[in-house]
Structure formats: structure tokens, C-alpha cells
Amino acid sequence: MNKNGILLHVAGLWTLSTLDASAKWLVLAGMPVLMVTLVRYLMHVALMTAVVLPSQGRALFRTRSLSRQLVRGMLMVLSTVLFFSVLKRLPLAEATSLNFMAPLFLMAMAPWLLNEPHRLHRWLGVLMGFAGVLIVVRPGAQLDLIGVGLGLLTAITFAFFQISTRRVAHDNPLTTNYYGGIFGSVALILALPWFWKMPELSATQWVLLISTGFTGFAGHLLQIMAYSRTQATLLAPFNYLQIVAAATLGWLAFGQLPDLTTATGIALICAGGLAVVLWERRLYRLPRAGEGAAKDTANDVGGMLYRKK
Image (cartoon, helix red, strand yellow):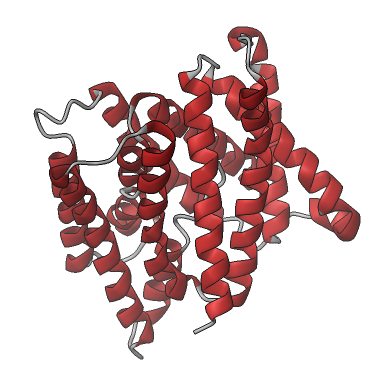
């Protein structure tokens, strides 16, 4: 096991949680979600152009399917806008936990979208995750139901985004990352006349706004480095440490900490996903017919939290 890859992966996830906290702070301050998303993507593209383009040159634009990159870019910006909208309505830990339903949705859709066989352990994981969601959103939890609905929609959208990412796996990850930022920026710039609204921001809020590009760029760069050193199936169990990051930042920045019952529901969501991940790793290691399908899904699940927000 490559310990450096694991450390890079965890550092990337915690950095992306910092991005989430910054976005939440900004939208609560009255900045439109689409404006936060636009600045985040523009900064990311600018940083990649300054740091990555000089070393990659024209190779950074080389893709086997521009149309697939376009579809992925559209799903990427949609999942980002949805998740930032969830952050406006829900505490950071609860919003992040709902996003962990994405790997379970992917496994539920795999038989139809990826032509993979039905597997009992995947459905059990899905049921366990939904049980956790019901505990989190139970009566008396005082969560915004629109936020919960948007959270589940974000997870579904992110599952489709992950499938689209798999379909451009033949391209350089840096190329895919760059195209995603470009398409996201262009789409939001075209929509700018419909959502333009720039509230007065303090110096601290301006720093937070600009920082979203840096934390997004750094988080994904760390994850690219991690996946280049370590298999996705080995990194997958460490994805769930992001819940710790979300809960910690939610408490430090917003004074929001899940109560015991909510924490139990979050743990159940994570347990459902983690159990399936570990079972998929076991199937991947067994020499048997259909091993290729198990390997593909295990790597898809392993990379689900490699996000482009």
C-alpha cells in the first residue's frame, strides 16, 4: 500500500471540504450560488493555464471525444451548482453525507447503464444508505426538506457525472480536468445576464471567494497525484474521512455539529458505502469469470469522491 498516495488523497479531500465551507459561507452572505460557482471555475481555469499549460502544451487539449468531454462538463457544473445550493440550506456534515449516496446510486444503476450483473451486496448497501438518510432527515431533525431533496438530486447527478468521467478515461486526467473547467466557465458566463448580482463583500469574503479557485485546484491536483500512485480501490475506504473534515469545519466555521441520532444516520450511510467498497475489493482480488466488471465498478466506486466542484 502506497502511504504517500493515501496521505495525498486525504489531504485532497480535506482541501475540497475547505472549498465547501468557503462556498457555504459565501452563499449564506447573500452571494448567488451561480456567481460563486463561476468565480470558482474561472480561478481554476486560470490556475491550470498558468501552472499546467506551460508544461503540457498542446497535449493538454488532446482528446479522443470532445462531445463526451462536453457532456461531462455539463454534468460537472450542474452537480456543483446543486451541491452549493444544498450547502445554503443544510449543515456541512449533513450535506456531505447525502453526497455519499452517489456511489450507492452508481451501483444501483450499474446493471442498466454499465451492463453489469445484479449483486445482492450492492442492493444491501443501497438499502443501508437509504436507512441512514431516513434517520438524518427524521421528523424533528429540523432539516430543510428542499435542501434534502436537492442533496439527493446532487448525488444522482454526481453518479451520472462519474459514469461520464469513466467514458473519457482514455484521456489524460489533466486534460479532462481542464476541459471540465472550461466548459463550466463558458456555460456560466453565457447564463451571467440571468443571475448577475454582486452583493457588497467584506475583505474576508473577497479572500474566501478567490480562495475557492485555489482550494479547488489544489484539492484536485492532490487527488490526481494520489490516483497516479495508488489504486482507486485502495484509496476508496479513506474517502469517508471527509465526513470528519466536514463535521470539523462545520463546527469551527458555523457552530453546527450533528447530534447523536444524526451522527448515527451519517455513520449508516458511510457504513453502507464502505461495506460495498470492501466487498468489491474482495471480488476484484478473486480470479473468477466476470472479474473485469468487478474491477471496473470497484474503481468507479473508489473514485466517486474524486470530485470536480
